[in-house]
Length: 256
View 1 (tube, one colour):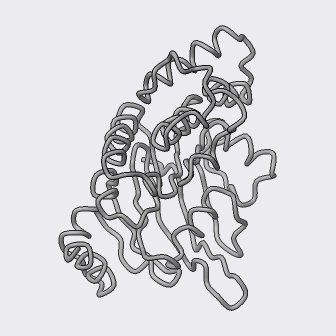
View 2 (view 1 turned 45 degrees about the horizontal axis):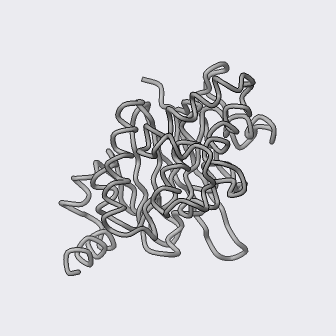
């Protein structure tokens, strides 16, 4: 099977400080990869480089495009990368406000992404938006409400609807449950797990919460000081960590 994403020697530095260095992995269709590590470990820098938000200093991010097969997204033009971000890629921000247009309606937020890929029929756009609100457990009657009228958990679910409406194959998630109450987190995680499985999505999830990756991720990468120190099947890494840093991460959770 051809990997959906092939990452080779990906490196980003900020002067003398390493953001991430020599990162290598393959991600396959319908596979979820978790990236964990403490603050400053490099996981957010890595995600930003993968998603095209940051330009790496070295390395390749090769995506298996629908039309042209494997292409290095680092070498793509800005317009090519932007179109990829509207179609086959999606990015779920930690803070929903960063991924929503707060001054337009819930339906408008979802419909805007459809219009970005060429949809023009108002009735069809509105129907698709309403359908997706229902899929993320938001009452379709609130289609004309603005995100500012929603709770934090609802805003995050709306952001997910906005991202998934175009049927992407790869979703980047940056601390998708961060800042939410525990009960809201549980509901959101259950929703995400269902959508990932139903749609056959590939996803890369950055989080400091090992419970999140335990529930969602098939494989796990552990980062420290910008480098991957351990990788493997999620349960294997969490139940039998080999690297001293991973052992410390797991034990600190168990002691809480």
